Length: 479
Image 1 (tube, helix red, strand yellow):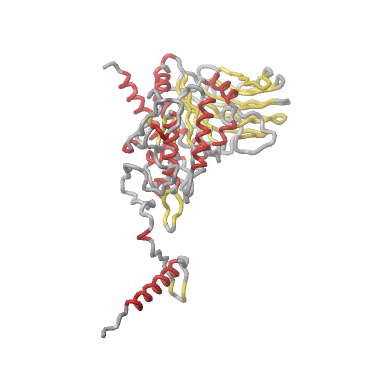
Image 2: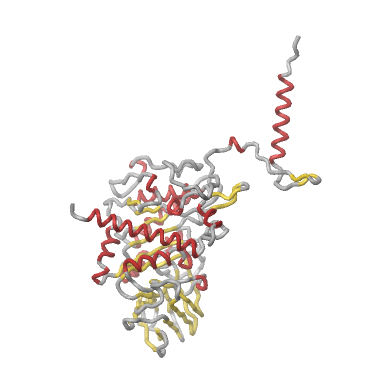
């Protein structure tokens, strides 16, 4: 009679699996005598095939029909019809085809005229119009990375000279290529820093309180063509009492003036220079009392200005600390034609389980911005690529496409404009490729662009705006 070895074979298989599983848990590089163990992963072939893998650098990436190849949760399931979206409007714009992701600004405004205000204003520059864009961002654009090259390219096309809005102090003053910026004697408050005595914050999410003899000095840098000179300065402040201050333009002698009291209201002081302008401007407060400063604008008449309101660590939620009434006072002076919000970098993780908390935060933030800038078009620029180590590889964090999808859905809900920066940059593993290029386009944190990378992405976005302008003109043209 033939012996049955089935039981022994099963036992042997189980023992082998236990042994292999144990070996797979050993760290890579562990040595047994002179023998070095290699990292084993016996479950690699049965893991979720939707995980992002590193792509060859030579391969061109295109957006798939959906982005559901990443792990999904209840939030990131796409809205499939208008009944999923609660909106003040009866009309909900259907989602755009994924082949356009990163190639166009997706218009989810309820009247489908989201860019008309901007391009209509641009067409009026030749008649003396000044066009302004407020860009709320995080550390991805601090130091004018990306925004500096976007601004400079559009000023070449549309006109304008000067960097636009500048803060009183800056954490990255020595890092900027658009401006030389020196200051002393200021206490800064922001939407990020916790403070029991936080005053009313300004347009850029900051307020600055001067000490005696506090000073701020701006000087044009030579890196960008259009930010070296300016002939208009507008200084923003509020003050319980009248303030004596000293200002100096270029190499001219210092002059003393008085700022009128503006208790709990926005005050502005303006300097207008000659046609040729200046490349330096300084303001000093010998004995300030009850003064809050909010920043200044450096401009030269008609053209476009992109004001960079980057705040390191800003996930978007802290923008709700802006007082709508006070921000509307700023906007009454500035008259913005487009509001941009570009956040998400600080919410991305590589172990995404649920981003519902972040959806709720951005949902409230988008409502708040619409209240701060009533009737103004708002462009949501999605989070870009961000890489991290996953096992032994550097790959796109799993949270990136999930947050991009959520941001797109919220833009649809609120009737906003949307740009998919993730796919615009190149899709999965862009930061890995950028960091390994020469010159290096991204830092090895696989999170932030270098100045060279900012130039690549900034010019890419400038070309996007110019193409959108051409498309707008074609639609506007009588048939």
